[in-house]
Length: 496
Image (cartoon, rainbow, N blue to C red; front, top):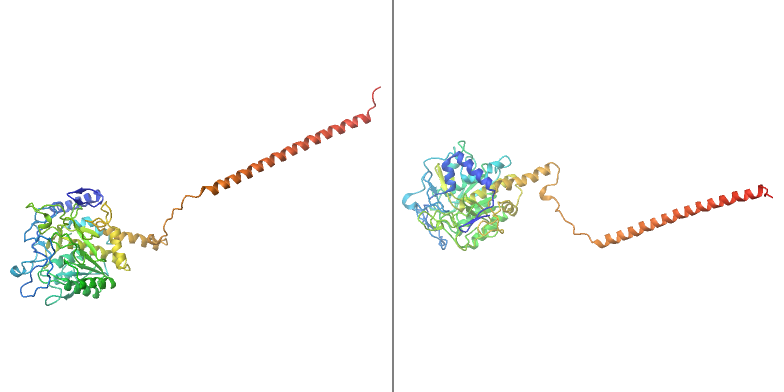
């Protein structure tokens, strides 16, 4: 592990990162430079943005304290200091929706993958799982209905759920944030090699729980979480956090967990630096996700924008980790300068922990596609236990258990399943190896002494027996000689 300006870097093998960036450079030099110096402007205001024209504002009333709002055109954080002019940014909120209307489609689509795709390598496990049969609920600004029809990235796999503020269903996404998240989770792989989702066979359930500007509150999020759980989603991606806990939201988290849905949520809003927990990520049982940049460091931590200010206060710095941050972080994922589809088509740049949470939700869908019987707790544990370790005491305050790893998260279970199919004991079910304590030497020494005495006694008995045999032989020899001498005296006359 190395540190720089207070950053914690993940202990991922350097060769893997180098190879990934080299591959990205081969695909498009400008993509590699964008990975090294990620950019993207935030065009959003604070969390409690104003309502859309003609609508009543949700009673948000809890903008994240201590946060600097970013105006339109603010430079991206994480030390990038430049704006990706090739593709427009998409933000979590759209504060000028009253004046300028909904977000406009991007002028062109990318023909290369995002650097996050090279970093995570989800295609390596697509032969094992593409997320088929798994529904991921995107609880946020909605998902553009056009993404689920025609040549859209979610064609045939998008279900439009309820809109909890305003009229209509969740197929209208004025902000564009929910559409970007949904395509990062499950967008199909384009024929031209553009960006794709982590789990391109998963289904998406869109639940609109914000107003047209992207603002929300505890009641809307609580209702959205319950609607997602009732809609059969196994994974719930909460797109927009709030600053204060609320009983209704806590109850909704418990309801979703009991229904078998894992909630994945960012540790902060995309356009503000915060020094306190946000919700629902702050609740136990919710997988809290932070963003990292292409160098493996927490996004926006310690960097500066082009104007010399704190990157976390510039507006594009993916929920920068402010000094003394006390939010719990479970895992991280790429969250700077990503490429994602937006409303009406085209490609946008995306920066923030909500986009990192989308990649984690997609990874969870891959795991469930391979192992659908996992419980909420087992799924969360799988994502934490297979993450790239940061090289510090775990969990690290900034990066938790490390960067999510789709290859290991899915492949570990695949290895165990292959062993079971072959008739071997699965790795997960194998008995633990027990190392016995050092043996007590006294019985061994006693046994050795007894053995020695026995062997010595046997040797002495052998020697005694041999001596007896020798004695008998000598006695027999003397008796023979004496007999011969007697015969000579009786049969031979004595000489006169």
